[in-house]
Image 1 (cartoon, helix red, strand yellow):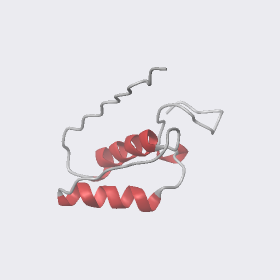
Image 2: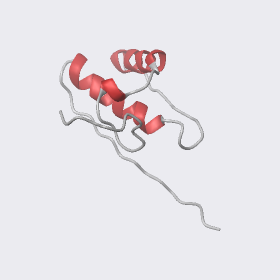
Image 3: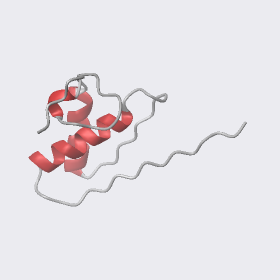
Length: 80
């Protein structure tokens, strides 16, 4: 893996070693996935929902039996 010189990643997902905390939330969502339950995340913008989703997708690829995942980022801008 390419070495990152700035540890404060503000866009995208690099790896688990650069992901900050959210262990409880990560485990809860992984448990929901394993049991076939749905999960919903609600929070203000720029809190880390996308980073958490990308972190979970990375963990799925390393811990669960292989299956396909799909991530779609849909943003609707507000008109003035």
